[in-house]
Length: 103
Ligand SMILES: [Zn+2]
Image 1 (tube, helix red, strand yellow):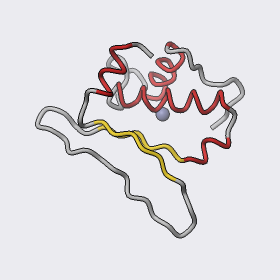
Image 2 (spheres, protein in one colour):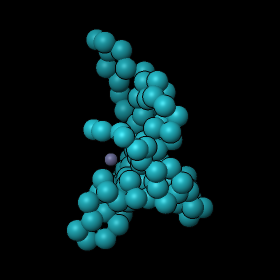
Image 3 (cartoon, protein in one colour):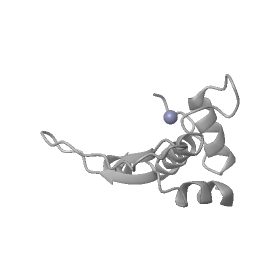
Image 4 (cartoon, protein in one colour):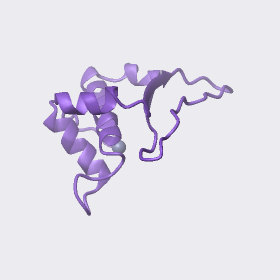
């Protein structure tokens, strides 16, 4: 991940990242920072069950979600699909979508 992307996320007080352990019958409160006048809050929440997946998938999904946060859930340019953009950035950063993974 490029240094400027890490700084974009780490230095942003409106960005939070957390995880949770989903359990039947329990709810989870997602921590979200307060937005500012000029910035909407950003959050990445990962289910710990992701750790049951192959490591290549785990690395890709974390990079993909951080790409969404960096892109503020938008594309890289007008008309760019946000999902495609997040996949492309994750791959650019060294974590391509694992082959054969189907949604
Ligand atoms: Zn996505």
